[in-house]
Length: 175
Ligand SMILES: O=C(O)CCC(=O)C(=O)O
Ligand SMILES: [Fe+2]
Image (cartoon, rainbow, N blue to C red; front, side, top):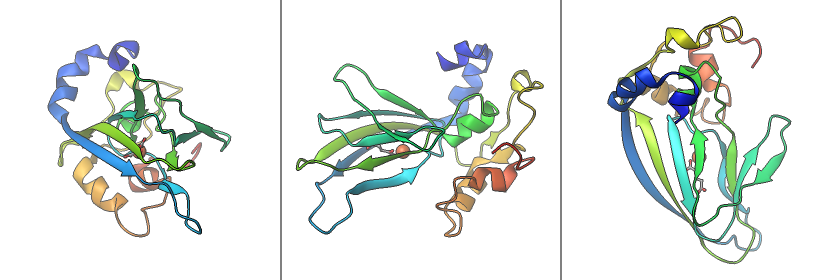
């Protein structure tokens, strides 16, 4: 659906070939007195796409471009879809990898399940020529996802919002 909306459906097979999948179930317990209520620190996913669902306990928050946080309302018959940094790079930032976090507020456990599509370890992420135009000039040099992942997990980069830009950004303008 996303590729269709970008007129890039011809890359579907390439995309399927590139992606591997990971399912993760997460449990967040209520925070104790004198303990931070941060269930998951703010981050943007590094993968292609993440599809999330949770039990009735809210907690996921997404940050907008002005830095404000919004609570995400899950409903039983819908999922939340997050764009990851690899997809952001592949679309030259036509898609935004939103910063998000989990904040625990009540006294109930929160459970969530995520399906993560992740580029295979040594796959090369390179924006297709169709996404390059005047408004979206080449912003990231092609990169090896495995190498970038190692770079992301270095201590000095782990909390750096612009780690990908630092690793393979053509320019640091308009971050
Ligand atoms: O539990 C959630 O709702 C979010 C999980 C998440 O952001 C992640 O695993 O990257
Ligand atoms: Fe996430």
